[in-house]
Length: 271
Image 1 (cartoon, rainbow, N blue to C red):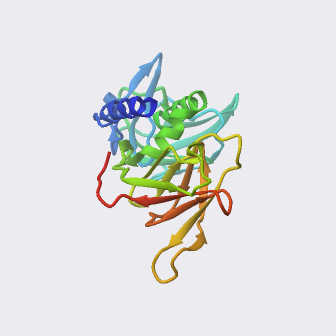
Image 2 (image 1 turned 180 degrees about the vertical axis):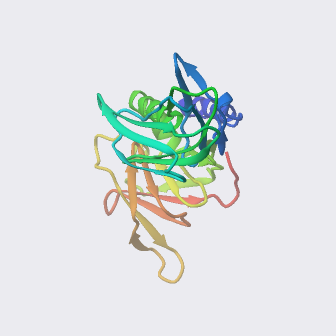
Image 3 (image 1 turned 30 degrees about the vertical axis):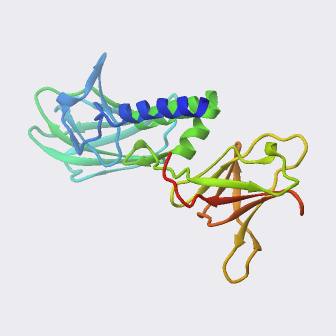
């Protein structure tokens, strides 16, 4: 079945996602951990990381921010021995830093309308003429968005069958142990294709039907008020009804004489 093939692919994907990332964020990046693009020292940007920058007496270091960001302010631990200037060129904000003495160091925080850049700057014999960043987190978001736009079925599958744990997609443990029973007037084409829960939510995969509109989902009280119907809060996601609860007895109600009841199996387990 198609869904089982997708499940197998998701397992493989989850295994690949569990591998440690080569570009995992770290607290401090030394100059040796950056990469060079022409005369630019390029760091991967992560919120909360601190980056090493070398300046030089008599020279200017250009801190190049992301195009489209608006500079909000520059803070430095010490300002008397550092000259700071700013400019925006072609939509890109720049912060220019120049030491006024040798063998000095301080920290800088550069704030924009989107993020904060945290630097430790030292005046050295060698220096970085241009420092900038790439943005792995944004690149990943853009890639995921592109995949979702191109593969809506994959997006639906991930949102239902996967959960995010520490930035990794992991398959949920699902309970498929349900059975259905329809009224005398309920055709088999109106029965749900699958019913399962993840311990918190119940998912009901609905068939396509040209004869009836979509049913209404009710909880059926079989305890004190046997057979009492209570409307359930649920939402549609693709072909699925999703209810934020687990049922002892649910009913897909098409009409007074046409409905399908859903029960947990008395004996069963996970598929």
